[in-house]
Image (cartoon, rainbow, N blue to C red):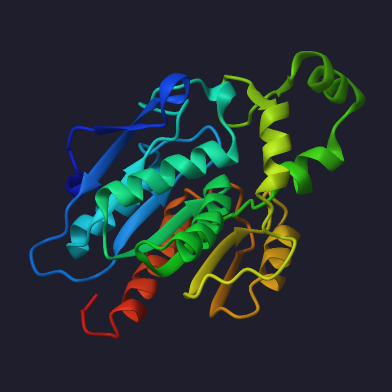
Length: 274
């Protein structure tokens, strides 16, 4: 779908005030005239941005179907301003909410990868509480809700705990980038305030989860745990037996696009041929 990917220049939205102000980069694809399908909203993972393979494929699908697509870079990521080390779930959630409210679509489908899955679940809670676009569906790719308290904190080594206490952060090698991953004390402490796996999650929409069974970062048992917290929703969980965390192979992308198409179909009651 590379020939359908938007060449639009990024737009920027100022989020926050005073010293907390940062410029958030957005790529916005409008819907074709008369297309009433929900807008797709891409939510990247930790240290990922809106130019990645899966994000571009989602934008390409939007172009093919004539639906709107919203992509953004969190602060400290990609083209956005702000320091990565200032990033927390609350901060990145605020930015995603601000972009969605700025664009103001009537209905949205959230597509979240890894940490973006956590942001998507928190968005569902905040939109239900504060009002806003109607959530028509959600596709979560190797979702990592509560990863700071569920996956990082229990596995901290003594030297990492010491670094957090003395320096306010620790670093580790990344499988996906030559740059080190950085986890701050602020991120971990804020993560506890944004937990979603401590009660029932009500999204009010269909949810499709894609999870690799050879994911070294988010074990497939984590997806099963998330499923237990979504008892009221129409949830499909697809395990990919040989899938890793990125799920960016051609076959993985095909499953992702099929899942998004399925959510679109259900949202418009089979009125649009796909």
